[in-house]
Image (cartoon, rainbow over all chains, first blue to last red):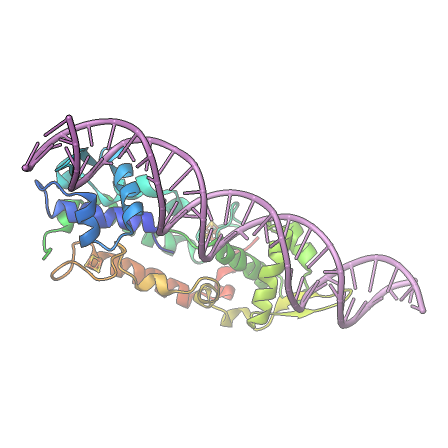
Length: 134
Length: 134
DNA sequence: ATTAAATGCTATATAGAGGTATCATTTTAT
DNA sequence: ATAAAATGATACCTCTATATAGCATTTAAT
Ligand code: SF4
Ligand code: SF4
């Protein structure tokens, strides 16, 4: 009942970048700032780059930066990339076909909570996120 | 962002049992009713048995049944056993130490949603769950 | 007593997420 | 030109959740 590490890493990286826009950040530097294992960090950066969240520049003085304005990148977009949002559409009890006649006692309550969360994820951008960052 | 299969299987099994209390259900029969891989089902049943959720009887006509009244077994108890509830206490972005000065824009909203879910899980018993079962 | 039907136990296999290691390529500083 | 500092690409390792297999033990029916 949590996002994957890859998702968390991605959110971590992007929110950091949003707070340091206009700066070109190398994997080496990001490694020193965030606690993400270096080689895995590299892979995540490649993934974010290939999918249009960040731009990369090679060679000495190369690095990464946000590809678009932080206000246009939403948390849900990132999660969609890293692990998908399908989980939010599944039965909480994990049933493929619901065995209950109408609905079980938990169905609607769960649905509501889940929709609340989805709403948050879809409406919160990286720009919203960093407003109060140190 | 979902419960583990083991959690879902456990919930599946126990809610079925709650709806068939007083009946002694064999692994073989449960296998025919629920879609859980047989050998894994056996392991999950053993786990539930060892942890006091169900009682087992061996030999011919053996099987499993709820160890206590369905109204005393809460969803949260089951999840606590199978995967723990620690996930509900973690930062949504997966940060070990929060990099934000006060809170990020998502913190409180997330907290609220998460508490709602926890509340549901803690207040809903197997008895509540099956009220409308087929 | 014997057999069949059940759980108890435990070893092993599989798949996927997470993590590591290397070499190739590009760019900049000297 | 050469070396250094960076990303691109890819192969492999490891760990855990999930799944499979088989033998041991218990109980009930005959
Ligand atoms: S009613 Fe309950 S069991 Fe059925 S799909 Fe909804 S949450 Fe799942
Ligand atoms: S403020 Fe945001 S980043 Fe910090 S702990 Fe809360 S959710 Fe995580």
